[in-house]
Amino acid sequence: MDTELLQIEPPHLTFVFELKKQSSCLVHLANNASHYVAFKVKTTSPKKYCVRPTIGIIKPHASCDFTVTMQPQRSAPPDFQCKDKFLIQSTIVPVGTTPDQISSQFFSKESGNYVEEKKLRVVLISPPSSPVLLPVNSDLYHHDSLGGYKDRIPTVDGLENLPPSLTVAEEKSLEPTQDMEEDTTGEDMISKHVENDPRTQSKIEVEIGMKQGEDDLRLNLAKDYEELKSRLSIMESKLREADETIAKLTEEKRANTREKNLLKLELEMLKRKRNMKRPQVGFPLLFVCVVALVSVTVGYYAHP
Image 1 (cartoon, rainbow, N blue to C red):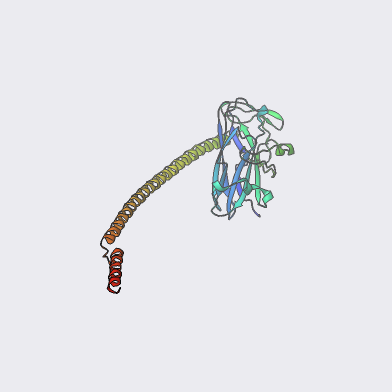
Image 2: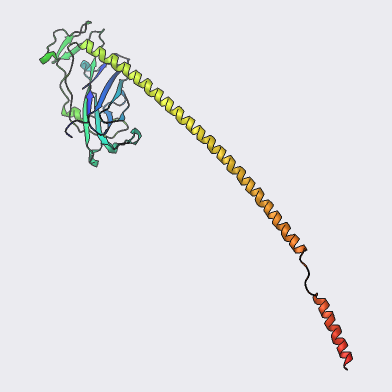
């Protein structure tokens, strides 16, 4: 493929970390190909994150979103560095394929399928109102309430230094979710892209992600409810039609049985009437025998 199947935004998952509170992040997928593309999301910590949806199909040159929700945590990771990672697999599927038909075989390179993989790392940020210590270039810098980092060392174009990319050991530790097979291949495509104002950027991303995630969840629930309701009404109408058909067939069977019994009775009566009205043809055998005996007797005496 000359171009990548999917364009993924953002390049990493950013969560506002607060103890005993959940946080959400919205990921946008854009299909760059002229084919139907299926995607699947895996994570190294399936019990820690909730992904909706984990699989899906994107039409040519269309887009799709999925939401990643981090469950409430009781403790913060050391130095606020999270080693959790996500893997997004994408492959071309035939036209008309539905999400229910997607299986692990679609994303198996051993079957000869073309599969693209992208890894996203998890970045934790503190709430804008609470100061925390974040490591930048192996030093600790204080994050004040105004959203700035004191003594921050900027890089080219004012972009902030991010933690180093994944190591080989970390890449091998990538495991699929509970309902997906293990697959640790793929290149690490982590991009370093942070706005000049981390407070504004993180706050906007979190608010937009949470709002869009809640709206998408409500919309999906409403769609699922309407779909189930329509399916239920269709099934009820089909059941009523089936009951009516069964009742009609049962009544016809009873009518045919009664008609058959009447025809049998009429046939028996006709047979009896025919036997009673049959005319007697010729002479009875006893009468013939008596006449023959009398004739022989008369003849014997007439010619001694």
